[in-house]
Length: 298
Length: 316
Image 1 (cartoon, each protein chain N blue to C red):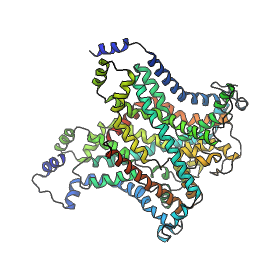
Image 2: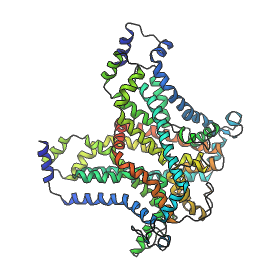
Image 3: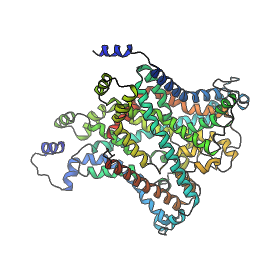
Image 4: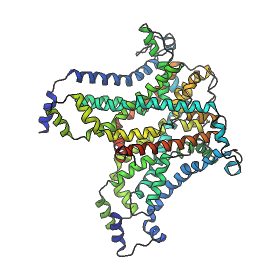
């Protein structure tokens, strides 16, 4: 039956409309690829070629000099390593808190559950905003410390609710039988609930990791020490270097007074993007699953 | 149900009583697990909400909230007299409305088109590519935009190659606005389809088969089956987006904006940053933030209310 249906589908002829749709989608996909091709082309081209605007989607006067500069610059490699460690640490902290919140809140018998849930959900729709958070971080003495990049965003209520929904959808009989066998709540969580939830834990970890990797605003607000700059902040400094020379109104940090060549900017963009390009295609499925689970709630 | 089962199984016929200690003893571990997350929420979510009182003070960083002088609504009065505040508010609304007009229908359209593609492999590959921009930070995107759209960039290179005039995408107001919105659509169009594609999967196949028998055209099927099928999803996302009309992310306008187009690119979040963190006027910046939070909440509640009145599903 199924095969027959598939065959019938295959035998359907491509109509003009089909072609038009495919052409449109291919064109759109190209707009997602072209920027990368251009960045690669720029990063491998000589500056003379770039300034005289000869570079299209293919490197002109091929040179790997720019990447040599980046890779020999210990700063850049240090920032890369630091950002990776920071991202992993942040993700671990977030997942720990998210699990600790999500599991108890699946128990309908828990006294005060509704109150706690309301208190949590409220923060999704109303927040103190940038400045009170900034003052808080300042008062807690976390300025220019790694903690300012970890703690203020250490749990997303939205992600917590996704995980809670997932926990609640596990078959109840499993937990019940474990409880009858004398398993404590903690035992149930560690031995039964968590192992069964690995896919959604992976998904949420990825969401947190991407947030941290791409996060820029908190670093701009809280960090002035160069050693503590995450990758995005470093990239921002490189990219905005000449722009700030053009107009002195920017005023963030003290960027060197030299001009950063376009090829170096393009190479830095690629350098920051490559980790994402490396892991994203393999993990795409988890991301998509996460959006679906989130959608069920809504 | 389960609660009743649990308690009756574990504690036999013990009558439920509201004794605090009883619950602590029974669910102590669960409360213990909640301690850290609750501490987190209290400190990092509710303490800043308490910090909003700065908006009613002449806040002094050395005196703190307790020591600072109360000034009532003076800060708000001052802000509502500032042209720069209205400019930020106006820009926020303009950018958000344009985002809504251009960016909201785009993923719906693309999802419907993707749904028409029968070649599974092709579909999967393009989806992978189309989702990618969602995972790039605004700093990366901003860097790419700068390199591509600046006067010496690829796009202008291309335009002049065609014999057209160069366009100052990043330093002239209208071209900047178009660039900003287009890049936003580009970033979200692929990822935004996921939810709609899932909703389309949920539509009853028989409807399509029946319409095939009736000889419906493709467009009619899209219009009369697919669109109504995903309408609840569209509604919810629309409510949420309307609720966010006065709030705007920081990264995108900050990274893409520059001093030449600040008449268009200075929005509430960048205004708060400039006034609060760069100039240290904490009370003013907090007041603007509070204004934004309150209006946002009102908008969200109203959008939800209207949707329900119209007989649609709301978010609550």
